[in-house]
Length: 140
Image (cartoon, rainbow, N blue to C red; front, side, top):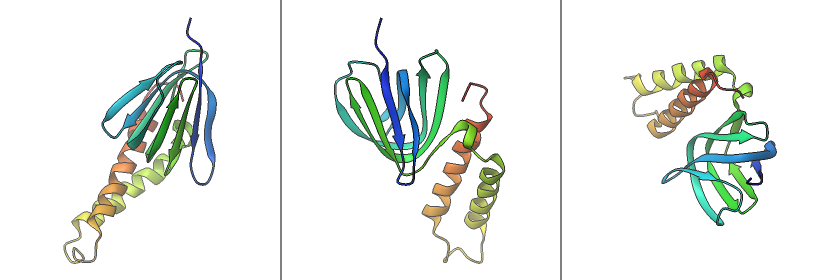
């Protein structure tokens, strides 16, 4: 039987996750990757998405990340994220309001020259991903 690995997800402000996991799946910049105990060491950039992991009891857990870096070692995965939230910490109302604000910025004909479309689009993508995660039926 394989050993568990330690998963740590940290942001500049706080430690979001620090717990043992059976497997960790993360949104790498080149595609999703999985890490089990004994994995070959590597580092990669993360894209906006969801880190999924199976805890020691076999329950699936999820954490939203908006980019960052991951380091996989044989017994540990460390994620340094720009921002991260557990599913249970996502404020659905706030995410829905962020979608409305971003959509308004992207469609405002009079202010098109003032709007930073890249930032508005990124805000929209983050809010959509949070809503998708908070609405899924798996455990936190």
